[in-house]
Length: 246
Image 1: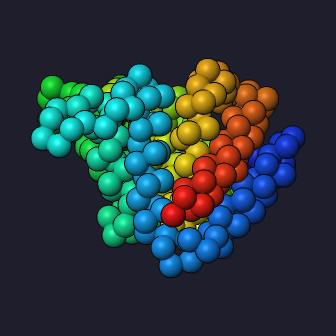
Image 2 (image 1 turned 60 degrees about the horizontal axis):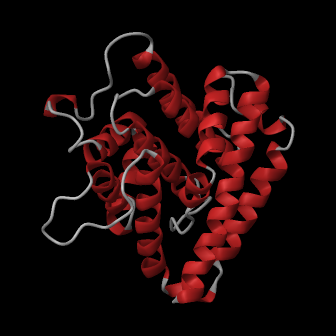
């Protein structure tokens, strides 16, 4: 099969941006606090990622009091964050590497449990259009592409935002899938980076770039990939601030 993602690395600015992202994440993994204490910093990264991801979709950033019912978007994002931390993350990565669609279904189950009325909708893509075919193609691409990891992560992220396969919780699922790519590929093996903070701070630019990716133009796709690479690089700086505080 032709690797359809490889040419994206040759779009203007993409390869350099991908290299900077990789170097920044590799450096933060070498931080003294992350050599043995990475489970602690990764746990904090997961919470920051969840809060930022929820806020991008209009959710709250205020953590609920124990035993209380919090904002449903944030609650779902926090459940996803727990699945992207520690032993649970390694289990989910294993599923992602074998069957990406099963991993996406699991993420949606966690993200949207309080957002849909019919439990039968959880983990099941919407019927109609070419959703199933595009998801199948995305899964095959993830399993076979040798493109740089930041490029694959950006494409998975952008395609899920454009497709909105579930109809609820899709943004949280898309950003979580991007994290799964970064972990499973070795780009961010301990999930220390927090690119979600970057996307939240530049929310309108993020939404505009996602729309550009969805339009499918060369400029739109290239701009989205470069933005996502920049988010990984900035997410490494967020990871360093976490490590410095430990």
